[in-house]
Length: 198
Image 1 (cartoon, rainbow, N blue to C red):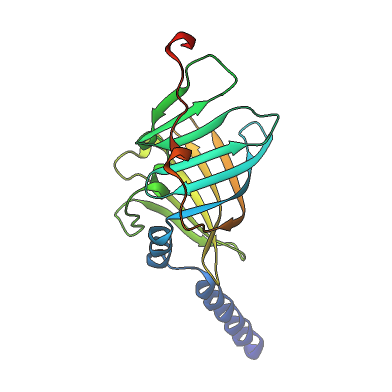
Image 2 (cartoon, one colour; image 1 turned 60 degrees about the horizontal axis):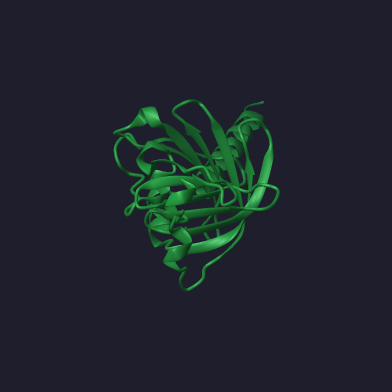
């Protein structure tokens, strides 16, 4: 009986050690995001109501991102100059705009990401496939939080889930991401509208 008990304890210990070994450390994840400057690739978005959208995402850190959606979606999202702009090229309405700092997305677009910052990370776990980091702006927790999913060997960001201050949940699942040498700044400029159309 005692051998069985000790055997079970040993197996459990090895399992726990393996889980810890597979979890990517917070300093390593901070280093990965800080080194991520330019990337683009396909994404699938799961909206709060369960509907799906697909498209291409462009990232230029710090502070810039663009979501270009596939038809029939006609809107696009441009993040730059500290603002998130939702625009529809087919509409004569003015784009909707709000500060980036009021969304959890600001955490991964920051000039310097530091998951060791006090009260930023509220969860750090491993689900058997990915390391999951739950983070918030420690100075503005009321703006919501983001869950980031990373795989290892090499470290890659695979998915994020934003939970905004109103409780709206949006999931972005990343496809294969390429690392071009550069992306034009024009990608991250909201479209200009003639004064007469406003």
